[in-house]
Length: 525
Image (cartoon, rainbow, N blue to C red; front, side, top):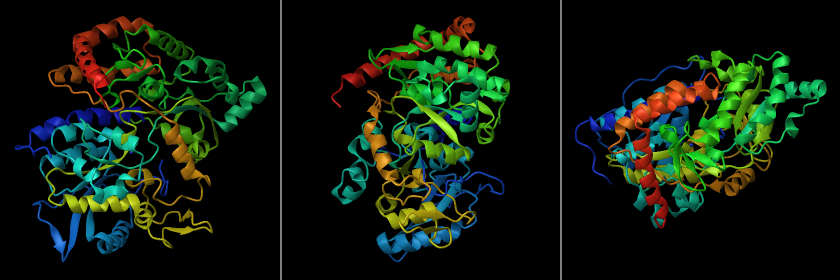
């Protein structure tokens, strides 16, 4: 999981160069639902064809056609039938249709940057923090939607989600995207297979569910349980599936990354608002000591460091002792559904709305599109119209799904259409699968309402003048952080790592970002 995200981080770092190198720059103007089988798998074909270019409006009468680029959703056998049905509905409702342009998820960051740089015929595009959203907005590739968002014409769209979610999507004080309202906070739990936990409780008297766990600093409390898992012969006593500082820091009460999306090793103290190098901050020494000791005890498997390591296969098999799970509404059932096996979750205390959590799935409009009004109408329709949202998420009733007596979605397996609520619409708008809890939507609302809001949720770092330092620190992180997070490196390596960070320019970076952060926190937001 982490290696995939790190590759996206590094690819996103190239976005600015792609945009800047394309000649004249345009003027400045996220669970899920659906058929949760996913989009990846055998038999899917790669789509590499370029969208049509030229920018001319493809109109039939008063109907405007838009090109919509989306990450994933590729290889669906019934794609054309679903899009045709959606277009028939939206043409009648708002006079707008789409040309659907799905792209392999692993290729989307580079592909969408190239499309936008070349001003290819793209109108609407899926965007998230990990697809280069902030950089693309700042480079002028995405349209400023502020006037649309605040227009009375789109009052219904604005009302889909609370104001704090809209505010969390701001980039430099402007709206460049429309968030898909999903779980808008982030938090973490520790996860273990139910069968293993029951065995350990019976044989060793250790109750996984009774272990005290409030936050990432309580990880040491699980050592006896992990040792018992090792004695039971699991191949991965600790599986580094989001089980490390890279993720956990987002929901910690003491610290958070100053810029999670950029993956630089600088942390923000939530109380003092001071920035520091994580490897130089003595508060993290016990963490590094613990993980190094766990490695020496054989709790980590070096296979996890290999490119292409399939954590999901291990999680599905249950051949592990401890892993991490990202909190969502209907938490326990969602984890069991995800991996097709029964698990227990030991939950951390708090969830936070962060810099990236609101930006996990959004719609944006290309800055050069001549059809922004039509694009906003289409976005409003998919975000507010249940019938249209259900078409996009679940497909066609009777072929891709049926409904139970309560109107909930009953998926028809292998129908040829798979999509996700979190990727395309609001959880309030789409219907709910019958496998979800009866109060599923209420749980979503409670989950989001209960979340804490980071003081720097709206802070977007600017790296003008320290671009080389940023790149050097990112490269260093990619090289070493897995080694620290799985204990192959530990306290004995910190001195050398600190020296490398300083040589890469960490002190100058901290000074630059601290000044920006102080100004941000002092402003009347």
